[in-house]
Image (cartoon, rainbow, N blue to C red; front, side, top):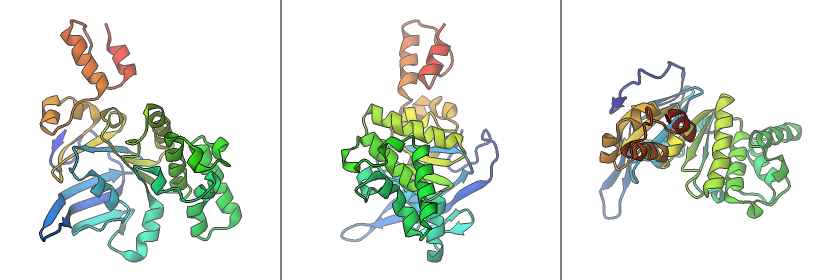
Length: 288
């Protein structure tokens, strides 16, 4: 585990798909002055990895997410996506095809009255041929296991189904990376499970995932975790390293996943739980 913006030795070296280079972002506030959301952040997102970004409210998580496909341009520093600088306006179309963003509220991304029309919206706006659009819609719906939703009206769907449709709309643009900005925050447990199942399947297929989340159980599924605090990277490491330092997390107003909390309580009651289980499966294996 590294403190501040250090390199992570435990993570296998992979090519960087996205680089955040010494980025600072400040928002103007009424009456003058500025609120610094990010300060001197340096980060590489590797091809094919699942990166979780966590931190307390106001730590800069959503600002970082918006930087990753040029929705926000840093005040200082650069964001490089597959060799393209987000400062280059002419490259924004290519950048947003490379990195797609799924927001917290799926209603912000659903624009059509039928699911298949909504998923087709992005490819159609690229001017692709009808047969190609149809194939992309088919592929995207297959990826989220939602062919049965194809002719449904989005307003009739559950929260989890709507978020899966929002992901399909991004997938139809054939991105190499998907950024999920608190995309499960408004969902019930079943909806969260639906979305996480899709994310895990996409990751196994090679899609790069950046998941901004406040659920520690979701962060535990990632290959690597970055912890933001006051606009800076406070911790960086694999999940077991991050969650192994509970006192440091508490100092940052965070905690370990619920399963790890249960394991800790079980030990206090005399149950010999081994190691640091982060998932239910690990907890069962860790029992004596």
